[in-house]
Image (cartoon, rainbow, N blue to C red; front, top):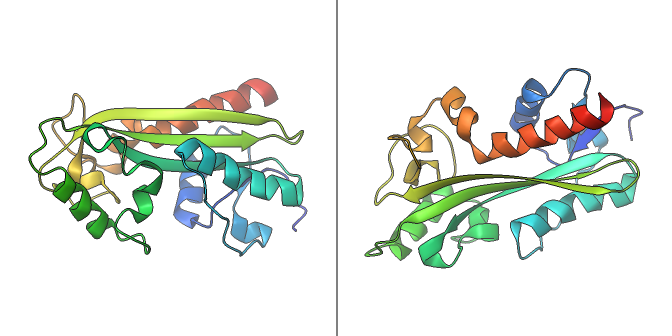
Length: 198
């Protein structure tokens, strides 16, 4: 393990790490699992977004006893009893196929009048003392009948946030980041870090 100060982000996603470093307050250093040298798959066996976020952070804390955080995100649709929820990334089967996931959602939503949905991100931060802190970000919206837009990823082309005429996939990264569930949860997390370390 590198003798590196900072907080471990429980992810191999280098793009997410770059984004977090840009959003973070000055004076905080974040590093990912690759820099930690952890290559094995971390089990995501929770039945909720909250549980998965906590499981991932706990896995790293138990092994290394370092401050770390993990995030988990899901799309919750009222008419589908909260699905795909914790299974958002693999709704249509293993492989994280966004197109197939969207197609399955649209198929299940055929003929349904209630199109209300929300994106939810939950961050679990475990400090050096092993104390858990949770930060949630939610964006309300509704599911379209067909995809619109080519930007973004995942379910972005079929999700239109309340109060906006564009889907997430039609927005620029800057537009999306101003209102997204992920940015809301990370803003809460960074405010907390500032309050305890600032």
